[in-house]
Image (cartoon, rainbow, N blue to C red; front, side, top):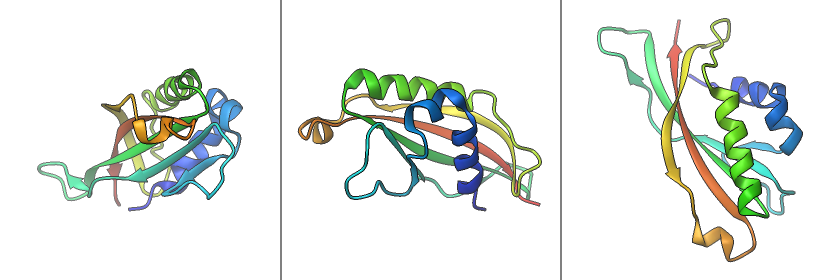
Amino acid sequence: MNIYPQIKTRLAAHSAVSSKIGARAYPQYLPQKPTYPALQYSQVSEADAVEGSAELFWVRYQFDCYATTYVGAAVLADSLNDCFKEWANPGGTPAIIQCRPAGLIDDFDPDTTENGIHRIIRDFQFLIFDR
């Protein structure tokens, strides 16, 4: 149940996100010396079946928004919220039926601010129809 390609396509197509990061959206890991701002995303939960369904699953993804300023990271995080608000891709494989925010996870990361990079984390849940 891989939705990484659909997420990458959505990020590239959403002008508020792509105008800030261009093609700097990376699944799993940032490159060694990335250009900022940048976005890293990964699946952080197993597929959780919807009760009573063998084909519907909730999956949670974490998105790390990196920038050289806190404001830059916050603006990217806000753009990410707009990107996935009420987004669905029912024609995709697998089909994404719904997306919803899973809450603010981390608004300050002391490990990243020491090197002059700021990170804000956002989580989203995707309802997947696995045919």
